[in-house]
Length: 88
Image (cartoon, rainbow, N blue to C red; front, side):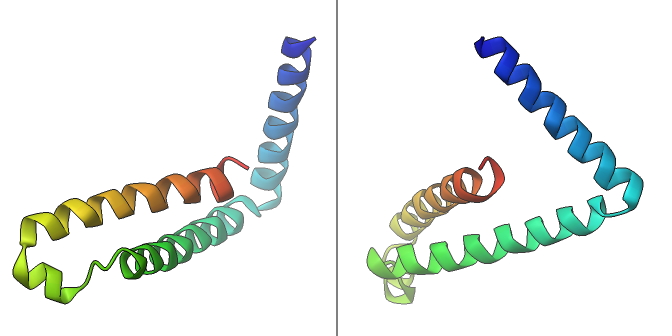
């Protein structure tokens, strides 16, 4: 039963892809999804950095710590974007 549902979902995705490709809507859809993902990444990164106190003063005082925290923030934001926008 699980494989049947999974196979049906894959076929639905493939059919949607082919339809969008043939009607010329695929590029528009991908461009819009990319724009939304970039906007969401930027917003989440800024919000997380502000909430964790990662700012220019920290960057000037301790660059390695600033880089470590920003990498952590970016990875968290990317995971959120992937889960909420791409894989949903």
